[in-house]
Image (cartoon, rainbow, N blue to C red):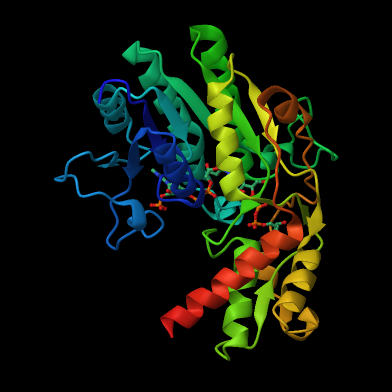
Length: 331
Ligand code: NAP
Ligand code: GDD
């Protein structure tokens, strides 16, 4: 339909992509997403919104692609002609980036450049959102805001810093409406199972069901600013609707340690003292760690009218309840 806005999402099958496609459909968008070919289905987070391309009034379209394939990216941008690109695709696991630094740089760094170049060469007035990360701040002391210097501590963060500056550069040099959302950690019932919050809540469900006895973790002292993902994808949308292209920190301003998360979640699940279940496995330590992240989101509050709603304790409850329910449904 002529007046319907078109969005193109890379990383549509991920946690954030799945919430963003739901959000944009409610706003009346036609949504296109890049998916990777895999030998097993990788669309479980978006299966509930899948629309048969043969039916009428379809508003979700999936396209095979990969961030390492510039020909494919250029073709998709020229075919889809989106109004807005939300670039969320990435090898997003910090620990894994130490094992696969080159692949991470290719996907998370050069992948962004490939999209920006395709947008520039298309000549179309496409707005671009870059999923930048609080991980870029590394060991810069908290609270971190848009003016805090970067000090990347992982191959993942180094690649994200590259993408952050590429986004700014294409804005300044070519006048593209290109923006960075510097998002602090955000979690949900759809969070990947190997990120620490979901690893904990999934393990709680398994321990309660008698399937596991122990949970093996790494650094419990690290502190993060954990928010709720559906609220964070709304910020991505607001960033692209702002009157001018700009960069924004999106966070809750609250900081908790991994230990705090353990304490809160095990107690809420009725398992008592988490220390009975948790053991340290050095394999989960990182060659370099980001110890403390706490975001100052005042600019987003003032300019976008965005602020987080879900508090830490409620986030823990949402995730524990969902994992217990998931497991019960499977059994
Ligand atoms: P996620 O759940 O890991 O999703 C990543 C997405 O990227 C998936 O759809 C994945 O596809 C896709 N992808 C990975 N490699 C790709 C490649 N080579 N080509 C094409 N697609 C590829 O991540 P998320 O939590 O939703 O995060 C979304 C974005 O925000 C990421 O860029 C992440 O780095 C960034 N970020 C996340 C947070 C956070 O706390 N969640 C905070 C700051 C920034 P498959 O499903 O096929 O694997
Ligand atoms: N994953 C994981 N597994 N982390 C553990 C574990 C474990 O067994 N034990 C302790 N941790 C600690 C990590 O060392 C880190 O300090 C903290 O828990 C959070 O780790 P993750 O949940 O893996 O997230 P992250 O902060 O490294 O990265 C996430 O947030 C970034 C934004 O700051 C990812 O979503 C990134 O993509 C995102 O950019």
